[in-house]
Length: 174
Image (cartoon, rainbow, N blue to C red; front, side, top):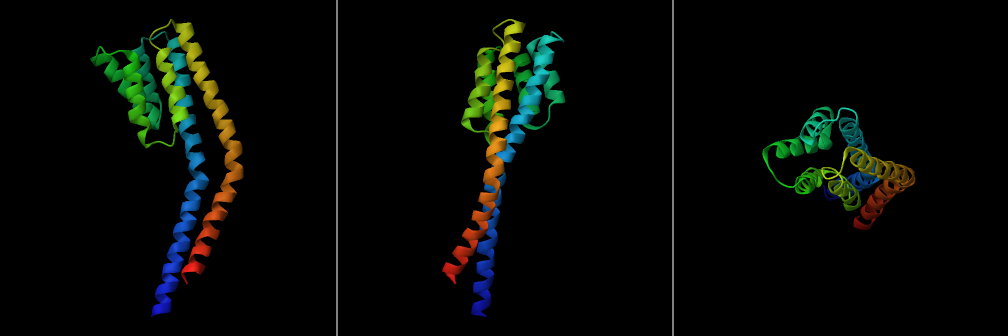
């Protein structure tokens, strides 16, 4: 009975370490997905500002309806607050960004790049707003490319380390 319990415990340790390795292996992939969703939403915003010539509450509402996930919630929340409140736009943008990105895989660098848009959108004319959105899209494209290259290399390493770490812990326990 004692050896069976040790083997079950060792198996659970191996499994949990392998799952932790898988989490770290795919963490950058989830960040890429989050950045890509924000990129799509920003491109929608760019077309709303540049081609449709909508006001910010209208543009944000349309983007919120068409965007998926966290960016959709972000733009919908900002549109509602822009219609209801007379708060400065930068406060609405940063608060919404902080709220929506709390459960995402974005890091402080990504959130900071998106937060800098608050200084451009809402204060300048349409061409400069579009330029600010394009700069954020360029940042996202560069970061996604960098993460994709890094992710391919690290994915195998994290999976292997998780499995080998679990086996090592199991051998040390037994």
